[in-house]
Image 1 (cartoon, helix red, strand yellow):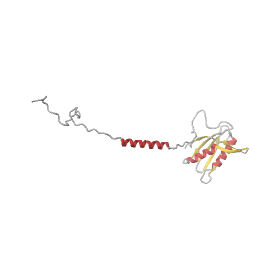
Image 2 (cartoon, helix red, strand yellow; image 1 turned 60 degrees about the vertical axis):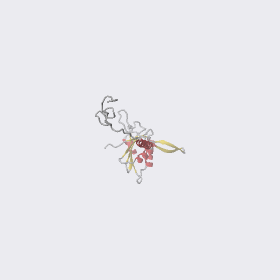
Image 3 (cartoon, one colour; image 1 turned 120 degrees about the horizontal axis):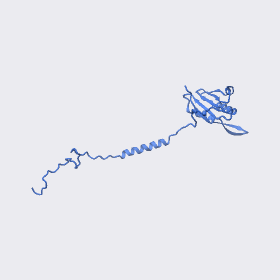
Image 4 (cartoon, helix red, strand yellow; image 1 turned 120 degrees about the vertical axis):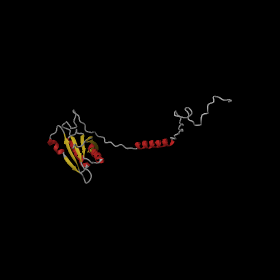
Length: 192
């Protein structure tokens, strides 16, 4: 044997011995896979763009009001002789207005309770504003209204009711002035 070297057999092609591209069990290695992520990145970047654009265009509506809270040391009911708390219940056919106060008698508060019927299909916001103005004239330190809508009352009706109760433009000595009526509105619900 000439030029020989150790007389061993040459390894087979693709034999897959360990260290020659195979695995420990002598099997051929899996072919290498290249993932093309360009299309996926295009889709995700477009999706992100549209999500950001849609959230930026969302209009968030909120009613500037408070909710009833239970507190041992403070009540929403007015506690002076010059103030009352007005309760306005909104139904599909009328407004029901009443007042509560700790310093007034039932005889004082009874004339303030009225029902204001709708004019056709629409609530009578002008009559509500006029009645709230009369209450404000009698009890000038009043500023809280508890709004109790029935189930199914439209959002628009609540907003217009709150607007009617918030202020009134009156003419004093020939000059129009804005008089706050009941700017503190508490939205409540009936417990059934």
